[in-house]
Length: 119
Image (cartoon, rainbow, N blue to C red):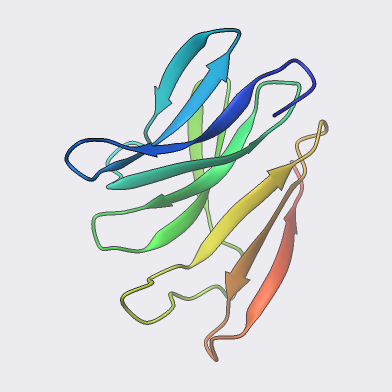
């Protein structure tokens, strides 16, 4: 939740598909990364930016930023997918008012690292 009261998160629909969402003063909006099979909205800031995680059709999990209605997918340099069933490459877990994103990724040895992405 950000200071304006906007809440982000995810829900699973009746067919088992995960969707991100934004709840702002009683208005509920579903957030789906284009073409994704699962979206998790994990963080937001007062400027309305949303950061999170989505899984593509190959089952790989990537970080995303949603700013002004535009999605941007990214993975830090050196990030590689974890073996199945995870497939996680990176996860954007937080975003501050300046748009700096913090998250995690895994390298080729399967070692977890933190990252910071600046605008």
